Length: 79
Image (cartoon, rainbow, N blue to C red; front, side, top):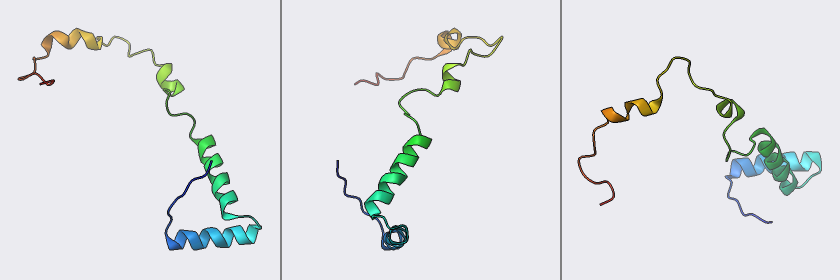
């Protein structure tokens, strides 16, 4: 898969310098950076394990118990 990205001149210069010093292409460095970022930021489409493991707050009333106190909207939001 190929991508086109726009980067400013300063970043382009830094990337080219580092790539040259390492004997690699800029594309290789960008690919390595993306791989590293993806490893540090796992799939965000799922809830984190801390949220999944949450059991609630002891002795705290359920959210639904306050529904009767809600006022209806002043107008239908779907109109």
